[in-house]
Length: 335
Ligand SMILES: [Zn+2]
Picture (cartoon, rainbow, N blue to C red):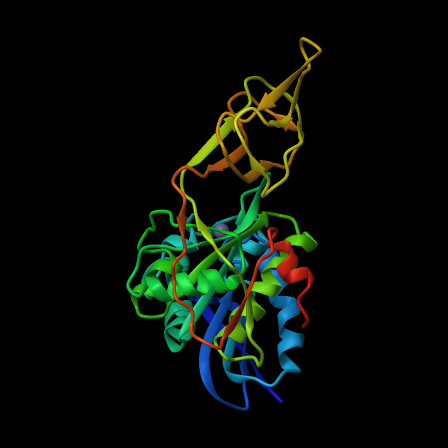
C-alpha cells in the first residue's frame, strides 16, 4: 500500500505572518519515476484542483512504483481571493519561476514550490483552464525547451487530440522545469470558476494514463493514433453587443461557411447568423450570454498548418486507439 505524507510549504507574507501551502507526497512500495501534479497556479482555475482532490484517494489504494506529489492549490492567496494572481504584489505565479527567496510574496512562493517540490521530480503536469467566460477544449501545451521530445511524449500520453506549442516565457513553470531537465506539460481544461465533469474526467484520465505510461501505476496507457499540433488561431468576434447563442461544439471540425452560432441584436431586434470563415477545429467558446462589440465569441484552430506530434513512445507502455473522438478514450477507460 502507498504511504501518504501530508506536508506544507511555509511562505513568509510579512515578518509575523506565514501562508501555508498544503501538498501530499504519495510513496509507492518500490522505486520508480517521480512525478508532480500541480493545480491552482492561477487561483480561479478550478478543474485541476478537483482532479487532484479525486486522484488522492484513488492513488492511495493502488500499488505504486515510484512517487507522486500532488499540489492542489499552488497559490492559496489567489484562490481565496478568486483571482488569477496574488493581491499582495499583483504578480502572476506562472511568471515568477524559478522564484526568488528574497523577492516579494509570489517570488518566494515560486521559489518554495520550485526548490522544495519541482526539482526533486523526474516529470511534471501543470493543470490550467481558460479564463472566465472562455471554455477551452482539453489540450496540452508543449513549450520549446530542452528535452522537448520527452515533453511531446507526455503530451501524447495525456490523451488529448490537440496540442498547442505557443511561445513560452522562461518564467513559466512548464518552461522552467523542462529546461532544468524535468519534462513538464501544461494542460488546459475548461474555464475558470467552474467545475465541469467533462473536463475533470479528461484531466483525471490524462494523469492516470501518464502514470501508467511511466510505470508508476500498473497497466498500459491508451493513446490516440495521432495528436495534432495546431497553433494558428482564428478568433470570431462579435460585431455588436447582444445575446450570443453558440451552436458549434467544442472540438467540432468546421469548414468555411459552417454555422457557428447566432447573435441577437437587442436594439434592432434582429438575429445575425455567424458562419465559419476558415476550416478548423473549435478550440474555445464564449460561455456567457451577453457579448460586447469586438469580443471573441469563438476561436477556431485552423488546420492548414497542421503538424503531427511525432514523439516516439516507449515500447510496451501503451496501446493505440483509433477513436475519432478523444472522449471515447476516457469514457471507455477502466480505472
Ligand atoms: Zn492558468
